[in-house]
Image (tube, rainbow, N blue to C red; front, side, top):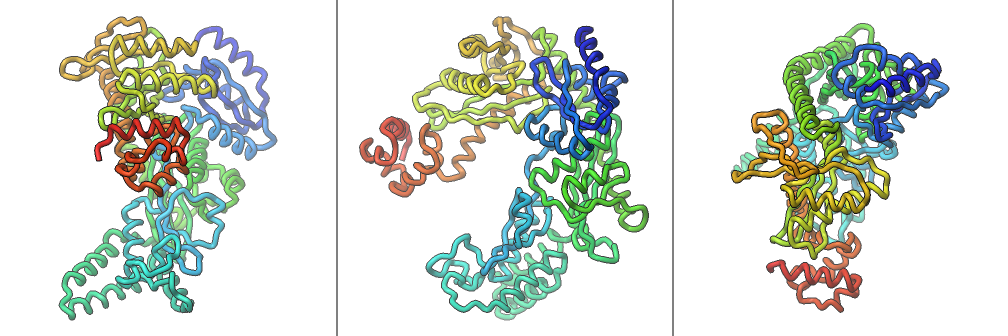
Length: 596
């Protein structure tokens, strides 16, 4: 931080009131890089600049050139504002959960004919429905296996929509045939639902007994294959679905948060207690900025905001602001002073400590290597580098291209910003594909006023860098570009900078390691695009590749033609009844290269 910036920040700090509010740190481009809240804005903001900081906080402070703040009437208002701004700006120094997916739950629907299924991303509106939810299941395989077993034992409805005739499940005695039932025995259905609920709450005896009886029956009838299958189901219940009962004297339901910090690292351990059972647990380790308690609070909020069900009660340590959590989630938040639950909270804290101690050496080593790689790159290029965007192409059948873009902040992947691109059908080579993708990406950056990267990395040498520079220049953007050039053994050996100067890279250096990691990430991301669309059905996938064909038109084409062969035989005039003439021509051109 230079003297002018220090002076500017010192002057602004003198004007900050001692009031609650949210503050926003900004970098040289005016981008918000961190959002925090404080009961006393002046004291909290001053702490960043008037004391020695290390780790992630040190990197943040070095990146700050300005700050803003918004005064609120209460600490709760400042928390709500903080979370709102974090959602809006996704600042790179705020907590980034490693997995942006929520845990799966098992849902038993409250319908005339109930369905049991695995679901994710439960929003608060859905949580208020009469459907029953069980979980979360940190082990998705266990959740699916549980549903599979219950659906095998109980003849629940299996289809999403009732059909006009009996389906396969009816004929194998795994469905009562709801689609043609006129008089449903509701007492039988209710009994079935209660037994399922009891099982999902930890009572495995009823279902185990049913399976045992069927197994004995199959064995007596010398149907040994079925008997073995039922025996495997019993083992799944006893092993895969086993849960550890906690002796809490009554059926508590809550989520419990323990944590432990070591300098700039924070480990959080969550215990999921359902009906007095330790249903599962989850742990996270991350670098944090600011106060430990605020970081734990932010983590808890982010955990539930991403789709996990807010429990009726949370258990937290006495350092965490319970009133804020209660008001934010409208749920009960407590801190036990003694007894079994206090012991459980201590156990969660001990687990968090053990997890962190087991990994902190590796984390510190990785962070040190990463920071050294950043310094090496900045020294080699002569300017600061925080955000990197890099691209790779992948083609289908040798002609039709897709592309992927990955984003790294300080050599850490920012997967929320990854992007996939379908490329025009007239593109026939890697260079043309790169031109199109870079133009589209940075035209969008320009039009939507998105944050620009400090560096663009392209795969290749002087030609690729020159072409990328032309595209960026045509948009009047000032973004540095480098190419990663491979040697005869197809290994990265040189950096080609924006001036087309060759910079050798030591293959044993941290910089080489992290650049290789970026290349591997973008390459795998691009080719996974093809694998994903192939997995959804070849014809449907091919239509995804043609620009101008959306979901509605795709469904109409699939319904009318049903195969690549029939679609290839169709005239442009016939296709134009569904598509515009231009898109129909693109589709015909595209299909010429597809073998049938």
